[in-house]
Image (spheres, rainbow, N blue to C red):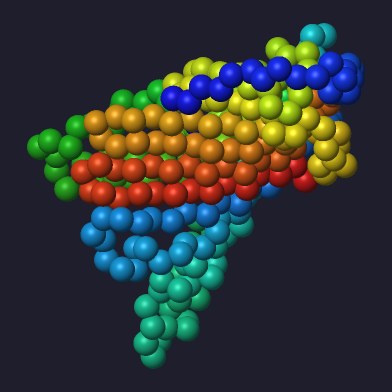
Length: 297
């Protein structure tokens, strides 16, 4: 995952200089690979939590790899998506207790945690659609899978233990982890998809042009504007766009401010920096999350 902009009057020569960017459609083929690297920084402020809650958090890094497995005649590609995230060993180790026996004990704990992390990570994959405009469309399925687990009322200790084991097995299993991956990638590509889908409807990209987009993915309205009509980014002829949204509710507010590089010839999102700010009214707390997102391959 509001403001309104008006379209300024633009010079004819400037419009003509931008139009050639959209002249050539892209052609994807089976085996093509795209890899995006994402770095996320989060920070809390306000409220009355213990002081350690406000300490700067370590950056979280991950990569999203898409491999084209099939291409329809209209240019729509079926892609296999895999999320890779390194095990945060330093952060995990910093939370382990000390003491005389710490070294051996913590080594065992770290090894077990790393194994569990790697087992879950190998299931963070799914199939999705990369349309001809460069939007990654994920069919998120959040249907309940644990209908066969008994309700936790009047259960024996053995039944409770069995139900717990079933839940743990499901959470660690391929179906649940694939759903987590789907939701994560769908959220990451919300703003890039807003850019890709709306740019596909435009014939020119002159600095200052602006339009409004209603996103079904997060039920938000984005005000999009062209910051730079033509520049080089990651070796591509790109445009730089701004996307902003804001939503107020009785519980607080949520806003997004993003800048996105997009190649309208290749129909490809190249990079994004997005800042999401959420304010919770009742606690006075504000969460600020910054996403840096770049194409690496």
